[in-house]
Picture: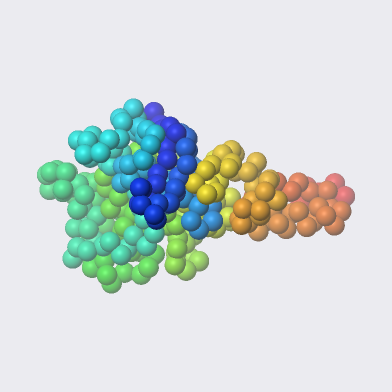
Length: 283
């Protein structure tokens, strides 16, 4: 069962001279197990949109349901929904506050009233999911970790609630290339284990390598919602929206313009290598 938004609009500072329509009559579904990318230039409505997925924001008009649970203000069902839909904001390590890694990751399960044994079990599982050794890190201060390790602790804290959907807003922002690649690989593995993922990113290369479906939002409305390869094939339209295409696709387009009979809808380095080898073998 999916997350469903039906004709959702959201207006900041409604009925004031400063009101701004951030989302306009927007409808979409996020299905179980999907890996969805969400792109759009700054101010397009991405962050506002994802906060509707678990009821942090309530629509000015329209309806949101999660696994057929309607999201309503002050509803008791919101607690259940927020366990199902884990939301990781930009720079989530800024929200770390406990003395040890284990206490920080276990905060959510403990707040649910679980026993110490159950909390420990969830902490161990979540740390395993983000590839952190329990014995090595459980008693460490989260504030003494590297940037990538802090990010993993923050993500593990959301995973400890065992959500069905994981929403990530720029999860690699500010990380060095190695830490960024590690985080992205872990997110990919989580999706392969059945967790639905929505990835908000400004990196077209990261999106191209990972997502199956790509949503483009502009001025609060969905412009494209299709397979990533098909969306990135609309290079001119994306550029008109102030967005880019993956670096590998740019290379393949240039090669094609110079007469090499390659496919231009190539998204990853691995695909580009295979395509170039194929063309050279047939030359």
